[in-house]
Length: 243
Image (cartoon, rainbow, N blue to C red; front, side, top):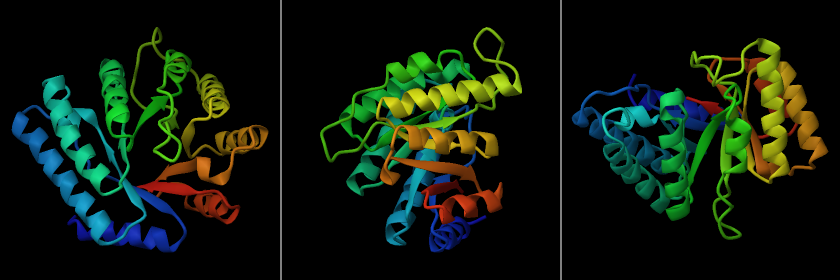
């Protein structure tokens, strides 16, 4: 598809009261030129978001920017994008991948958040380390600046039992525990789930912590749970769709 296709899709979602994040598919690149090309493609998407005045941000995978080649290369390419996005007031989400990338991803997130602010990260509820990682998130920047911002999802990579919780109900419980701690700590959370049980649990926690509407959002993938998306938006919740 051309860039015009996601631009049109994001515009349609915006007309339906939904926000969006743009994600260029591709990860695990094996050459410097492909990492540089990924940054160039995202810069094109950034320009489209600004030019079309879209209510959208960007989501990136570090291995697409060369993390498996060299962390320095990855930092260099991500910083090109984060710096350009900062100048245009656009937020960049650094997605989380498998366990081999977690420490480097969190290092880069902390560094870019301290220097730019317009970045967030992802934590995966099924990882046994997640509650500790929540406790080690950076303090929010100055009032009125970008908040500490975390997308919380269950996690999709196949990980060994020593590092990841196993079992459907166990992962659900881990998600609720992580969300409870994030909200209690005043973190802006992207609640990423299509699981209605977790949506209901999230609504209860938002009520418990009296979280204002502008301090969280639900997040879903394009084409999944359309009806639930409509219900959440109609109920007054902000919702972002991965495109």
